[in-house]
Length: 375
Image (cartoon, rainbow, N blue to C red; front, side):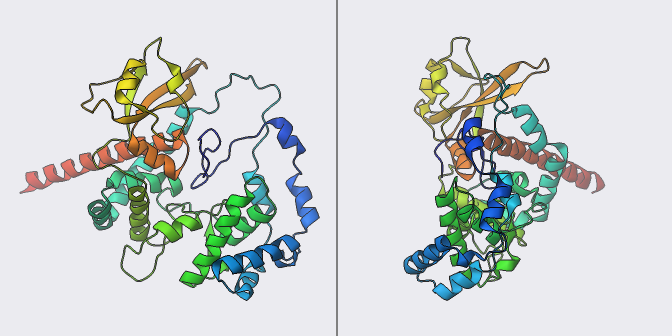
């Protein structure tokens, strides 16, 4: 995985890779030209590069060469996948000071009323699975629900691309992250063999992410669990499996029970902005942040050596001027960043979780009041 969210906004759910400089993009072949050069009608196993991959993968994984070749022969190049993955060049006249993204626009899209209400319904419908996941992994149910909500609107938008086509296109035709996708293609082949899946029936995002939680094949093999006990792992059709798998992923990446993902803060006018590193790990402490001028919006009862990171969320205010919201990200914010290396993403997950929890508590309180009144 990349080391900075400035290099990657997301690869798992919304899976967007930030733009390269226009000069670099201009030197890259047009996707339509690649399609002509590699020929969509040419079977992948007929390509020398793919033959070498088959040999290497068979030796490294003990998968039969015949199995690998048979699967890859079913793959089709997707110009659409390559187009979606290719960063758009920066506009020549764009000001250098332009906000790299608008947090408020993203927040409005990901933490809207409909997604909040659907999240509350998703919690109620899967109460048993959420309770089991919370007991076993220690992850708050609203956080797990929120990730599934941001990724796929609770399973409604899981992707319409054949994963095999996406991974082959991104491994052999799209060269920017070929090594990464080559690894994921191998993981996908192993997954097909282990779970006896038909490659023609596995669909996901254009980047190859699968299921309600949008797991890449390597994450499916490492973190997915059979949470409904039916003997199969189904991240597409089983809400319980998706809930347990997301909780297992977060637990495996260091979730700390009882610690909020962030604390809101306001920097002093002379705050030391060198603490705003854009990294995806906690690189300062509570005491250090205070001394540097990042003041929590309310009193915190946490140790001075509690690891934190300064989270910056740029946006444009009502007058169109650049502004920034700041937060103190905790170790649990870092855990969410392991899922997706974007401050916008991790902040939206945190905010949506808060809203889902609030509406669920209000609903429960109203239900109790109604029951008391009728008794």
